[in-house]
Image (cartoon, rainbow, N blue to C red; front, side, top):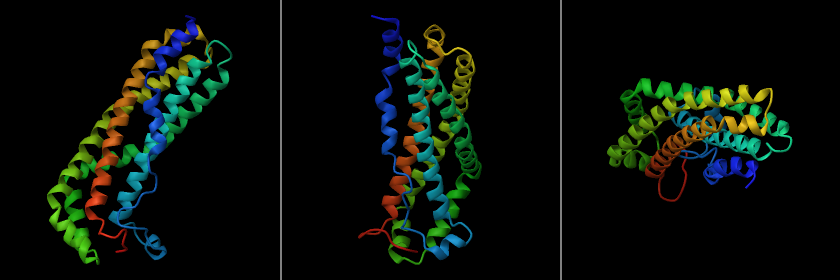
Length: 228
């Protein structure tokens, strides 16, 4: 077995997990598409919900893309890995930039806590669609559990993401001057640590999306989306 195959062997184990991120539904709606008139007004809680879901889906995609790019650096290590390293460095930069909004939103939701849910209850009570109001009242306990789940998962993502990004930044710096097989092999433990943290982040993001999908299903009237 060549050194290249050894390096790639311990990297490829989690590859299937990261390919799942392409299935994340970006742009899903809570109660239906907002009208043009609504879009010009102050963002509603529904729009806030939709935006956060989009940000979570984007984060899933970017984390997966970054770790896939790291895998490719190892694959190309025995040849000329500079192009693969360049793609990895760009992916880390995109993750740095795109994650700012996600981290800001999770921190804000955490800070607002139960008050955010109570605000949602008031908002739903004023929705014009009678069936939506009825479903919100009937499923209030389930909605509260889902919002609590979002809070917990958001906290998990917030706590693990910073060390994940730190590991990726260290790898980018270490490999910048000489992304060779020897140097990549020397960073085996750091790469594995980054991938483990990445899986934890992915699990948190998966849970957030699952809880959001659950909220959407509870509130969506029979027969499909409706406008407020």
